[in-house]
Image 1 (cartoon, rainbow over the protein chains, first blue to last red):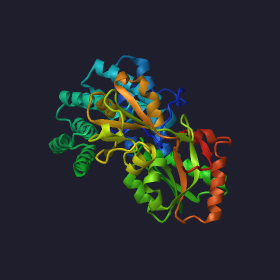
Image 2: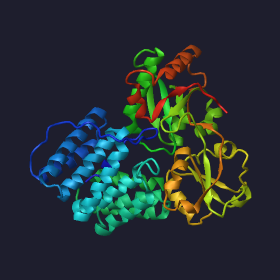
Image 3: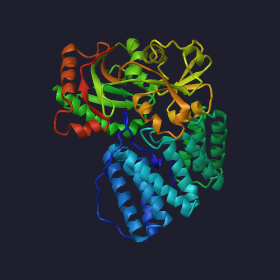
Image 4: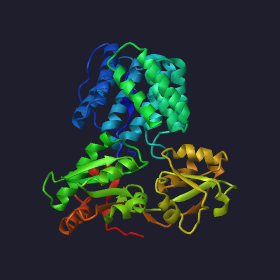
Length: 216
Length: 243
């Protein structure tokens, strides 16, 4: 799964709000696996979607799918994880609600990780790391690079050869001031990507590793 | 097309994600100024280098910048403030606070050999001569930018030779930290502007600049303005008061 899908859209500075954004469409149907896959697809499309209105629609679809999933099985890891991703997409399109949404996202990721830390190739820890690394930091939001590094290390410990986990760890090392560690990890991520089965995401991973290495 | 460049180094936000919100701001501000619809574009850049590059473009007629950026680059870019931002939760002015480890930092000489980290660390002129005016930092203090102020405060508390310069929001939240007792607010700046909208050089004719200023001062008073402004954490604008 893509790694950029959690990042909030945050403008000049952020405001924490106490109310939820409006909910939209009727609840879809399908197995929890189908709904989780639909959320993942929405998230991936959102990452490449330049049109704000289209991103808003994808976020609404993802939330709708996540709520339908949770309605079937409130404690199922795919639903908790999918709900976390959907909240991340919501944060991206509703910046005035972003802090509340990101906090809720972290809470869902905690539950998902407790249920199955290996889900989506250590997705709960990886996504948690990305939120902590990219969300607005204290005191505006939950961003905390030190904690993000811990989560990224956990993801790599669980799934050491999965390129997104290595890319996340490299980003965490860079943000916490370990330039040498970041460079080494971007290099590992590139090698792991080259050795991986070609997928739609492979080019993105290579590009991200190369960009990370260029910045070092 | 005339462009308003938002530049906020150290603050969160990616350019693409912020674009819809600065677009709405530009449309509302142009409308309030009586400018033709679609005559003002807006672009956001969260980095100092990127913001400077965009402000170097001939289409960049207006800049929305934090006060530290204005102090650091205002003269070189020929920025003339026309409005001062009223930021939600902060206001039009704020104080900056220097924080060191309790019991370790007293007067300026005690910071010799330290690194001073701040969200405004990209603007050393601001740090030395505005925020810490009257509190002469030793010459060997290194001033660095950071977006990770919580990590910095942990380093301060642990006794590293590091100090932090906090904006008003950060300083107000400091007592909530579990290690707050190990931190000490050493000195505070006078009240300083938070952010300006400024004209870049002579790229905007005086009459259009006046009209835009009048439009900005109206923002926040009209129906629908509040939502648009709150997405940028703003409440409105006042006439600028440059210290």
